[in-house]
Each structure stands twice: as structure tokens, then as C-alpha cells.
Image 1 (cartoon, rainbow, N blue to C red):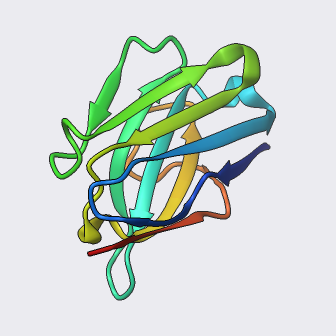
Image 2 (image 1 turned 90 degrees about the horizontal axis):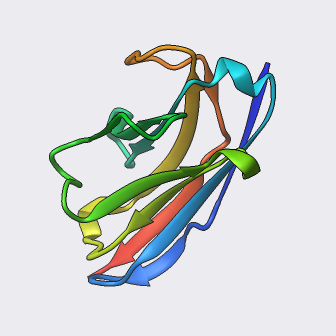
Length: 119
């Protein structure tokens, strides 16, 4: 079992930045890939970004490319999502997820952290 806890969400104005953190515990060797997803009200959960534990494989959704940066600190079992130039359409609950493989449906999920961007 992998336990994930997100933090760093909040209410900001458009154009501002936030950094989300996700701390993993438990069987972290089962989390070769770490993900960020988000879900806006009334919408399906969508992929945002993923990173391999080595950091050598990183991928972003087109909607956040160039604005968001994912990174990881293996010593702290933590993955980050630096979000710059935030837009109102980035408003969502952001979820950290983990799996041993690249998948559209990771096995392990955090509880989510709310990000609200006002115009």
C-alpha cells in the first residue's frame, strides 16, 4: 500500500503561482511513477502530469505545458507541482497518484487539495 498526502492548495488570483506537494509513504517502491490529476466541478478527472522516480521521464497535458513543472525529491519521497501563470480554468481539486507503471488509472491516490484561481 502507498499512502499519499497532498498539500499546498489555496485561493489565488489569475497569474499567480502555487506549489503543490505530495508526500508518499508505505510501499514507495510500488510508486515508480507519480502523477498529478485534477477534477473541476462537473467535469471528469483529467491528467495533468507524471514523473518517473528517476526523473528521466516527464510528461504534461497540453493544457499546462509551459506553465506547470513537476519534480521529485526521492530522499523525501515527495513530488511537487509548481504551477505558474495560473488561470481560472485551472480551478480544480488536484490529486496526487502513484503506480508502478504508466497508466491512465493509477492504483494509489491522495485525498486531493483544492486550487481556486479567481479572475
